[in-house]
Length: 295
Image 1 (cartoon, rainbow, N blue to C red):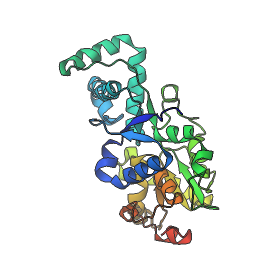
Image 2 (image 1 turned 180 degrees about the vertical axis):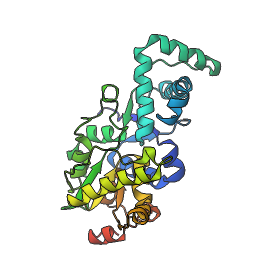
Image 3 (image 1 turned 180 degrees about the horizontal axis):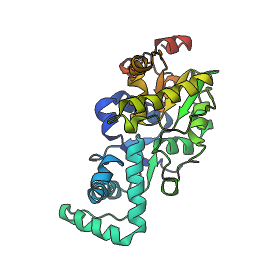
Image 4 (image 1 turned 120 degrees about the vertical axis):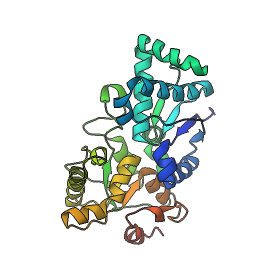
């Protein structure tokens, strides 16, 4: 039997520092499925929008330094975060394709005795789970969530820019939806599925950010969604923490459970919400957990 591939896990700053219960669910799910991960002395990815816009060269160099850590170990990276995934994947691809840029960045990396070679791959955790296969995941489901209607949200950075990311169909992503079905849940169709959650504009313009989020929620609820399943920490925080803000701004109450894909899997695999730290969600999950006998 071939030895199982071992990945370097890149959980990113937001998950590690602000929502560590997401990392906890990922580790439990990976262990259950036989996906082996180890730690690496990574820094921030860094951010693919703000940091990249301010200092592109430093963005490339810091990301390249992270990639050299994985190269040194001879292991591919698996990212739990859309933003980290986009940064590391785009830099990895761009430096492999552009010898001039690669030389420039390696001149910077020489100052810390490192060199980017382009010998490893960067994968999103959804890709790793999807490659394992829905049928294999189903074998570990002990609490089937039959009939649960799920609004899937991949987020913007998961598969864009599509010509570089090549993760999924950018206009009709399939992998998350297929993985959700492994639990017995039903991914619903809703008009705003591939649109932004509004997190990106939230730091500068609250009201447009909240209007985007409201549009997303209203579209999914109209289609019959009971919960959202997400794969990005920024999207998770935008959706989970701002439902009271929506009520304040628009006079409409929302109480939509927001689950990371790994949390959905962990519940279906028989883990208890308490051991997953789900009490730390801002939007309470009690009604959902009671309805599906998940406590």
